[in-house]
Amino acid sequence: CPQCDAAVGLVLPFANTQTMALHLEAVSQAVPPSRHAVLVLDQAGWHTTPKLPQFPNVSLLSLPAGSPELNPAEQVWQQLRDRSLANRCYDSYEDIIDACCEAWNKFTQIPNAIRSLCTRDWANLVPGHGMS
Image (cartoon, rainbow, N blue to C red; front, side, top):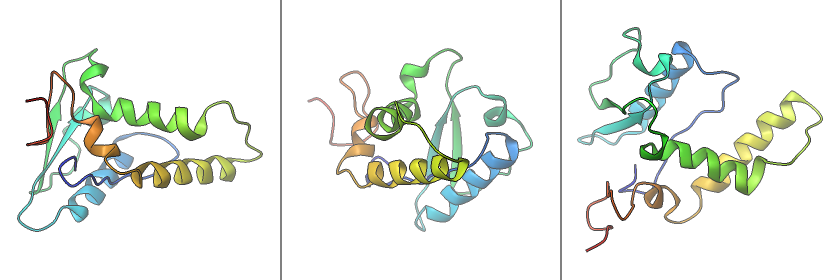
């Protein structure tokens, strides 16, 4: 949630419809009562399949194909790579999972990290935090 500067994420071994359903469930559970989440998604098959469960407090907003600059999640991955994950060797699969979890947890603790990804000179998804 950019307004709350909060995030929900799962570290999973792959991305498919089943793991996307788990993510949607986690988001739905994290949304406070009387609030609604809008997830901005690219055109990955597991984002657009009608097989995904629907939650009354979560809406999916599909971006046009080939527009990663519009997707705040793309910048999350860049931040995780730049801050923690790039140019490292791992001894085991478990070490990779641990590093991903640690990188995610550190990133979500940075003040305004989530909010800043949703505020640009040309786009402001957080009321009161854009250019005036």
